[in-house]
Length: 273
Length: 259
Image 1 (cartoon, rainbow over the protein chains, first blue to last red):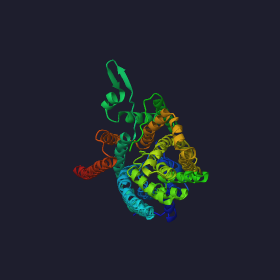
Image 2 (tube, rainbow over the protein chains, first blue to last red):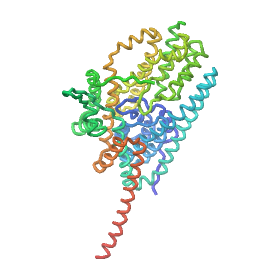
Image 3 (cartoon, each protein chain N blue to C red):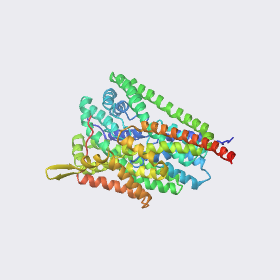
Image 4 (cartoon, each protein chain N blue to C red):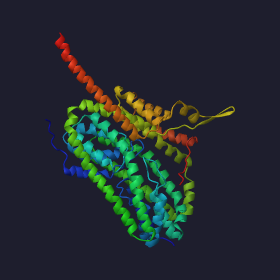
């Protein structure tokens, strides 16, 4: 029977909980919450890899890749992942489990919190405030944050216990579980690309008697999400085969947008109520 | 009524703090129902602030940043909407009309900020490479400070120069640049996915990747549904491999027995 020593203590968990409020620090469209995610995980990771700076660098690099989830429910994933880091699970397993857990949780959290908890508490609070009572905002603040903080605290603990409890089983059949987790992970990554990359070229060409729209008459006919996939592959190709730095790719994106704006391909459409 | 420079600075600071709360911390002091009475307190009219905040809350109720999509900025809309209600002594429904152009500016600037601030990613990587996590934290703090400043300025300008004059200022901003930067926000995740694939890609898993793409691109399935399909496929794969292993084991014994 394998046994694991507890390395991550209450102190690190507390720090990770505090930092979990800053999941969206460093947010940008390339990595979404990845910079913030590493920020949230740092207290635990630095403790686990205290005496292995080289390993710590590798681990940190794995954690700053694209991630998007709900900022309240993230503590569950933090708990699971830090327990897996602590028990030194397979890297491939950690990576794929992370993306398979976080991406769907984003949708669950949107429905649960932004579309249910917020309208209910804000609606009740605003109705009371309409009558001129200061109790309106107070009730909203207390009710909303009671659920908010309960979720944060409870989910971190629950995730950590779940991860630690499964540690031995995970370690025993690492290969098989890693494979299963990679299957889910790759399917999720595949689905994220057409969902989150928005890349179109609505260029219109006047061909004699007909107006030809490059986007709707060509790319959309080939396959939906054709350009996002093609461009993602192009970035992947530059990264792996041409050893391009992400910096270069970021500049390419900014250049495409600005040139597109200059040529009038991209137009700003104000949001309407 | 006229307002003093101290009041303007207080309102702009409130906007900066609430701008941070919109994405980090998220104890939701940035909602109009809270900012309304706070603006009221600063301008010396708590009651109007309370009621204006509540009516603006209903306006913004359904507009939350889902999965990175940006509605008109609730912080700017709530704070300026309430402030204009009190300053112009008009109905909140009219004041929100004055505040809306700035809420939209808040939205556009936020989108542009999220696109452009990706330039910190290489610095982040460098800090990691050097095992300098103090520096990492400092970069993250810099991000927060920048977003604080953005919200501060957007609220400061219309209160200092007046709403009408500020709108001229907004109109003089180059539209093509704004449109271009907003488009960058859609294109840039491709870089993130490419990096992710570099770490996770293995030839054996390519078929599953393709299935994920098809489910989302053609069937428009949400990510949760794709994850559930993925779990079903993974479970099937797991048990089939288990079975094959067992058959091989028993076959192996028989094989040696026969010989």
